[in-house]
Amino acid sequence: MTDPTPGFYLPAQFAVGPDGQAPFRTHFEEIINSYAIAGATQLRLGFDWSQLQPRAGGLDGKWVEWYRDVINAANGVGIQVWASLLEREAPHWFDDEHGFSDAKNAGRYWPRFVEMAADSFGDLVAGWFPIDDPIGYATRHEPDDATRHGEMVDTMIVAWRDAWRILRGGPPVASSFGVRMVRAIDESQIAIDLAKREDHIRWKTFLRGIRDGNIVIPGRADRELADLAGSIDLVGITFRSDLGEDQSITDDSLRRWQERATMLIHRANNESPDRPIAISYRSARRGVSETVSDAEVLTEAFERAVAASVSDGIDIQHVFTNPPRDK
Image (spheres, one colour):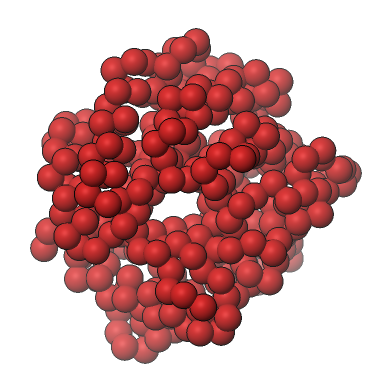
């Protein structure tokens, strides 16, 4: 078993945010050089759909050229770029037409964007992450109504299948499923039932759907979706550090975090189709101010979990972690 290929993960909001908040936008060459010096050989880069397609129709030529310049700069120093096409936000014009909450709307615009991205960047990128954390995306947009949430999850699965149909046969296509240990917020039956539903959707709906071709969402009739089975080259999982009930970073809390991370990797491997694994990791802890030193020790604990999982025989081929930050 070989060691995973090391890389960094730069989400879209950090790559192309407002000047002053995203220095990568104007200083990408020197930043990419620093990544190469730090030992990265690959970069997972968020491609901002809103910037690339500010209105329905074709792509914005200025932004296409900017992304191509970034990829060429990375390739020039030995870093391969993996393109992440849908992250936290879609274009406003798409959301104004109800976005992925409307299956017809999604089926009209999303595949066309994927086609244009493939035409513009397919000759340069090393791989694709079509949709980042589709379950989290659905939960942010339909948080309160289980029926509408289930409908949107179904639409996100179809969107994945559509992206696969377009991208397969070129650079490898990896998922980016947000995984975490799901806990009930209290001991009430309602909280327990909600946690069971989330656990099923987060851990089984996509992973098993890609394995056997059936969409199984609690509260909805099961259905088979054409071309869903096997629609993946690498099983990609994405997660953040989770200290559980620990309120501070200590040797014991880091050990428990490492154990949880190892469990997450093993469960993803057990639930997934028989494919290699790619892991994307960000150390930021929800609701907690995190120093650079915090990020470093949390990432180190995560990397030990990856090494332990590889030693256990899990085929982890790529690992994307936090880019280095100034102290």
